[in-house]
Image (cartoon, rainbow, N blue to C red; front, side, top):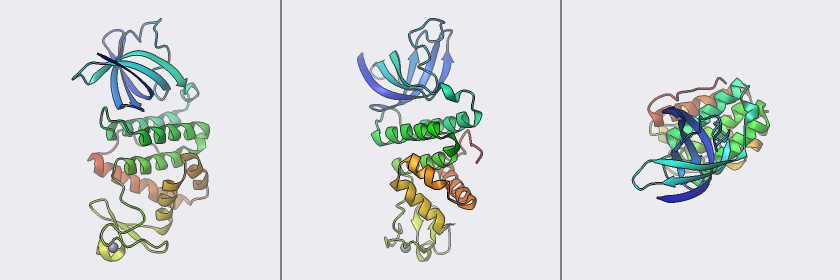
Length: 246
Ligand SMILES: [Zn+2]
């Protein structure tokens, strides 16, 4: 039995037997982990409020060989989200991000960029709740990019010519982006404004992106939400369990 120590973001938990919980979290050094927290539903327990969803914690756990479920030993709060519990919109948005992290992350595979991106998104939305929608769009773009489902935004996937700022770009059925000639008039047209927004998301932090997005038209925001939702649906081969209203 080996003992590990890592920073982690609690994503979801469900009850197990009388006093225990199974907790799903995204950890910095081991990616997605599912673990048992024994006795955590007893009135006095060593975990306290540390297993509440979206809490950032320092987690110590045991892992047995060939067992997917780890055993939580100690959980220490680094950042709690108590302020959230009364805000339904924020909770829905956070649950949506949590679900997508669970859907897209292979278990026990560390991805430091994904971990940092997720933490930054939860932080940016907590700091400025009115920016939640923009943060969700940023999160979707980066999740797709880091998991390898977002095509290069700078050049046509077929002829490799760099896109100009002025041309229309097409999302074709294999989810790659093509110029007009290479798309043969098929696929989903992506407007100049949306293309610019996507490239901006690649360059900025979620907080900075959300700040800039306040000036973006409703039309472009809607187009962005439809595009990311279409790609996510295609990758998952179903719709996400939760879809925040935007
Ligand atoms: Zn082309």
